[in-house]
Length: 269
Image 1: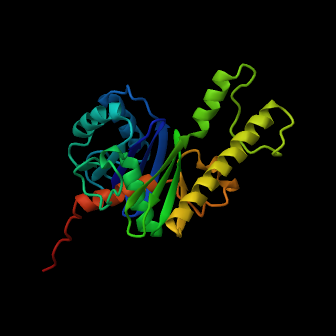
Image 2 (image 1 turned 180 degrees about the vertical axis):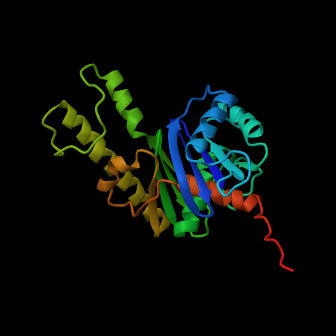
Image 3 (image 1 turned 135 degrees about the vertical axis):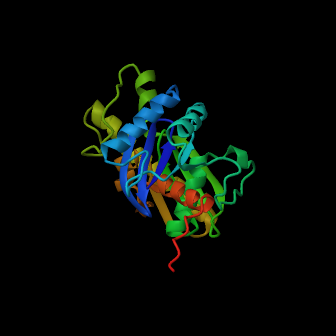
């Protein structure tokens, strides 16, 4: 059983894989101040709650870990946690020097977040290229993959939640509201006006950026939505063709397989 861990700015997403199949998955809050022991106790508790064994034999035992983080402050705790709680299994942290098979066709490859690299690998493996991944998280990331599986770059935009937070903080008569589809684009009250701007505004932003990227690429085979906030607006996005909420974890599984060879089957006779 492979455990994959994606530490993002707002949330951490985890999943266990049995081969290519996701068996269990979780989404928890990211706290950059968490110690290695806090991470270890949290992750082990989640696993034990499903009957997966952190140590010991059995079909449900964790046999490997693949992880990535977009939070530099969390990396040190992650490394210590893996050595202390999962030191008996092989692990891969996606960082420079780890084989991903993804060529970074940009000005400064060191700037690319590990999550964008594994998203590129997973998107190309699942859907081919050219393709675009739209990741709805703390920021809305647009990652562009070439016909040969190269990472070509992309775009960043403020995420849905932080945009709402900024608006509520800077406008005296506005407040935070539920991020949801309003009954009409023409809001009849403050809540509906905020929801309309969010729902239709972000959907329009996604469609326009994807349309311009498609013009530059010439063609796109797939536009894949992912991230915890994707379900809020993708129903209004005309350009989204697929929704794969676990694309980063799938990419982590693929990276692990590239770096850790599968055990050889026992010989017969």
